[in-house]
Amino acid sequence: MSQIDSPKAPIKTTIKISDEIYFRSGQGNFVTENYGSTFQLQNRRYLGNKYKLLDLIEDIIEEKCVGFKSLCDIFAGTGVVGGRFNKKSVKIISNDILKSNFIPLSVFLASVKLDKIKLFDKIKMLNNLKATKDNYISRHFGNAYFSLENARKIGTIRETIEVISESIEEKNALLTSLLYASDKVANTVGHYDAYRQNLDMLQSMQLLMPDIKYENNIYNEIYCKDANRLIRDISCDILYIDPPYNSRQYCDSYHVLENLVTWEKPKVYGKAKKMDRSHLKSRYCLKNANEAFFDLVKHATCKHILVSYNNTGESKDDRSNSRIKDKEIIDILRQKGTVRIFERTYRAFTTGKSTSEGHTERVFYCKVV
Image (cartoon, rainbow, N blue to C red; front, side, top):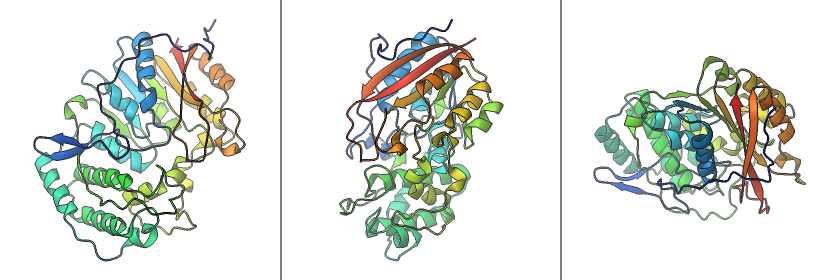
């Protein structure tokens, strides 16, 4: 028989206080002796970011997954879960289908070392560029998602990165610095479904050095693939699954950053200035999301499965309603082993339209047998 804890009974454990620093409200520049201000993997605003849930996830893993050597974060997003467990003794497999997530993941979690002095010099040079002429970014996103000054600077830097990069790893590091810097001055509430009508993000953009701990990345693997295809090719001790919860596609919310890093300069349309994103749409946002989840779990080769899924309840806006029901998640996981459920309630980072105070984040744990 599977043991299923009531969702009303959260895990009884002592919550650890993380020694990592996470910034809010424009703070979070880290000062190092040689490279000035730096930034870390988690220094991004992102829908569904698991920062507030990290302590609960870690408590469950420490209690249930003793001695694990590998963890796959198969819907990584900003990668904070893999980042929390990234250490010399643990192999992290990190995957996300968006290039605007994959590139930072490959910078912070991959094992290829960069010449930090050369990277610092190039970032300094990019910061000193003068941008007075319009470009792709300023024409489409200036005085909308960014101030005109910042949009011109972003576009100029992006063009220059194409010229000065000496390797794909260096290019990705420079793109990551640009992406994080651009996001920090974006005229949004943390996503790009829309921009603020009143342009109030006028601070000048500044690229910083990524703070990379190469010594922890020796065995890591980073992918940019469909999760249901990747699962057939990998194995791990812990599979962490954090799929989209509702019909809101992540490629819709982060199209500007995706456009910036891919640099294909597509046509954009509508007030939100979005490009064609059909190739990035997730099955987990559709009505048959439960079928995609079943397929993923069925083909998983692992010892433990953790699933994060937001209990948003019933909303007047059907786009916000969860695509997979709790019972469906439990029934699918029970086909792999014994199941328990843990939960924590917190105020979620939403699209800015929700007034709900009591979102419940549920972590389903399955001991594979």
